[in-house]
Amino acid sequence: MTTLRIPARFNGPPDSGNGGYVAGMLAATRDEPVVRIMLRTPPPLETPLRVADGNLLHGEQVVATSAPAGFEHEPPPPVAPELAAAVSGAHNGGEVFGHCFVCGSLRTDGLGIQAGPVGSGVVAAPWSPDGTVAIDTPLLWAVMDCPGGWAVPGMFDRPALLGSMTATLLDLPAPAEECVVVGALHAQDGRKIRTATALYGSDDRLISRSEQVWIRLAG
Image (cartoon, rainbow, N blue to C red; front, top):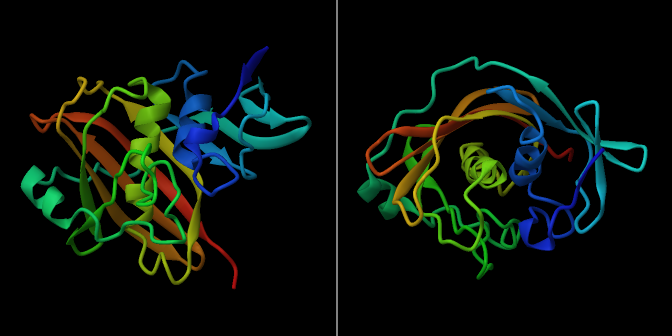
């Protein structure tokens, strides 16, 4: 039996794991090249979680499920690093998402991925591995998480949480490599929003890609 524990550093909301990082942890337990993770309940931090039959469990409660999957769209195309750097910080998390490991502007130990708009429904941000986190599946799934969220219109006014994420890794960035992550809006259907993200290396090679479903909070 595999047991996973989400370190407190890798939070999304203050008291639960970042959806992309947790999804990547579960995806790393599978052998398929493309995996879909569905998040069922906020993943608790610093708590032993069991992996059984592709599910992430807290006691008998299902935290997330996993399955092999495929993509519905082409990945968002690359964005010039200079443009990504110029718009970075436009969506900095504020007080609502300020403590998120991926995009939070109030963190000194986060990834600092603060994607800004580069076109209609498209956002981008620069990112480089800083050596404090292993360059692995959970990290790259986390990198691709929040930029998809910032492609969602009105995220501050009506926040949305990650419902599912389908992703694959094609390569790994080198330490300190100057990368760009791009997020794009695909569709909205009531409280359900579909986005996609892609991570590109300094030579514009596609490192990883994902498609996500976000669920707006009721109210």
